[in-house]
Image 1 (cartoon, chains in turn red, brown):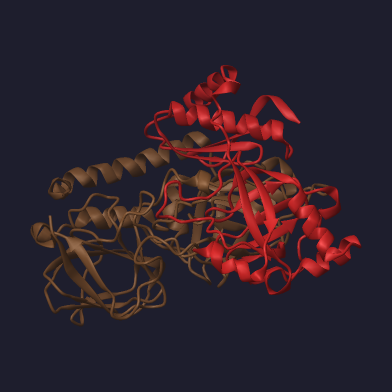
Image 2 (cartoon, helix red, strand yellow):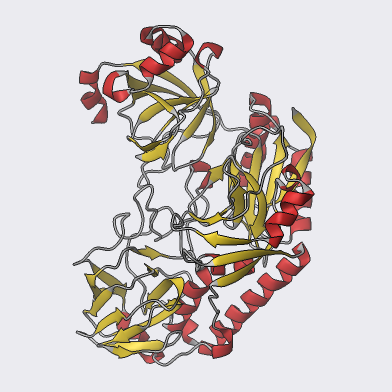
Length: 228
Length: 325
């Protein structure tokens, strides 16, 4: 649910977690984005980092510049005067994916788990528009939701020690993309040739919270063309 | 200002990276803070050689490198005691020294702590990426090409000659931290404290945990009694932002102190190490043990002000601050 009043949780003496709800949902996530955007437009003295997530915003502050009670009061005031129209427009990004085979080693397993064909998994995965709930876990990693019910899949029992860069994966009702090689426990169904994170670019991440994502299938031989 | 070759890596040690105080403001892109695991030692090291506190230095892990000076440089070693030597002669830590061109800095062996810092007058000239010179090893950017130092690497510093008169600056012995193999870290209750029973919280605060070899810059992994969440809760929570020092308890019921490499996470956090003790967490070494002591938010606030006051006085006292570029 979307809390009527936020829950403030302390994560150490220099960080405040503002929890706005307790579930994965567009309404809560939009509220997080509104609060985050308001703080970007009018930064609070002493706040050195703000990390938005599904249903919360973590604020890390310099305790020599601002004290917790004052910070909390500011946040409360911002929340009470939030303007829903102030959100920047979100973009829709189309993401090419080579599904299956060496690029999606778990595609067959996912299909078997749901009693459908791998092609049907691809059809379902590409038929939806996904909301970027947050970027986290590693630089540029988008948490996308929600998957159609027919694709809701448990994580792998044994996480892989190394998931290749660009892997498109599923876990529960989420889908995501690994921007860099990393250990990971999600089911890998394909790979995108797009670069999700480039620290030399502004912004460094291809996707941002609030964006929309559509996947489309490409053939293996098309991978190189997209990498250019 | 000229960038001059100052250091050549003769032997890198197992993990030596370029770090400053960390990367801020890019959390929304999933970029963690990185930076020195022990910012106290980094900041004091920089002040000793006349740098701004946030300048980039080398973070040395467990085993020291061998480094040759390519130009006369002012250096200081802080943090873990690895018995630093210049040309085979032991040198005092927490003090600035002249490393003459051709001179070799090496380390005899670790006596305490996990991470030593080598600060150089004029810093380590690597590009500022997303606001910081820190190395992010997982995403492979920042520092020197996003990787640990290797044999043959040559590092540059900005106008090292301007820092040479800082030689001999020393931190008062009474202010040097002590890295006990039986460490006590002060904590305040974490954001999911209510997911643990009173008995579990009591067990967490009354037990000694062993630091395991799986610990790294991302987190200090502990082994000890199982700290179980209240039964009937989901196995994880909604992913949320993480502050360094957060102590998470994953499904195996063994706590992990998160340092600066984790931006978000979905495990419950029972407590958070207070800012004043966070640098000590970065000095925990596999085999050490740690016990957590709960303090109030007011106490944590007082202690961080004391630490910042100490650093501020040292900044003024050295006067080296004013030599900074």
